[in-house]
Length: 243
Ligand code: BTN
Image 1 (cartoon, rainbow, N blue to C red):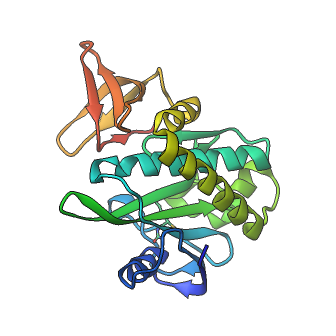
Image 2 (image 1 turned 30 degrees about the horizontal axis):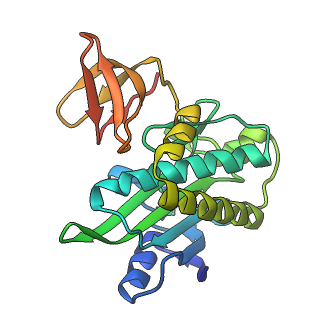
């Protein structure tokens, strides 16, 4: 890997996009100790305090069509779940599409940004944010009920450098397997950790909000759900609500 390490950046995503435009290769990694303008999904901010977490973006140049990009996000979520299990007794769950929860609280999120042209992926920037060593007091206000860190949940300090190494190693292995054998294995692993699969949840999209049972993921990475009338639906963009 070409690895770029910064003390402070606005967002590792922005840097990875710049590096992509300069032609940097597949597998380039950008890491920062602190982000002052960390980005979450749906234009939310992502708190990235100094030295407390893993704030990392990976540049990928996959040989995939744009509709397959969500599969990479699901893949990344399985990588994180497997690493957390290797390193601790924690029981991570993946809330579709890619929040990692421990004891029902979010410790990690993934932001995938794709540049595509003529129905071809130019590159993908996969952003991984993990709350690692925050103490309970470091988690502010509203977030208290829904966010946590590996340290809070495991009652241990984690080595950031070592955890990054494990993630990159596991990512490479899983990515190569995905490229050579397809999405099936990722789908199976994802479903093993899937949060509320087989349960009733509230689903929210831009247009509506409704109750449904989560069934699993489709071969293309969409979420499969069944509404109360028994209709099955495939969702590409939606939010699973809490509780
Ligand atoms: C989410 O759950 O909303 C996604 C959060 C993604 C955060 C990571 S931290 C590294 C990378 N740089 C960013 O600005 N965001 C992603």
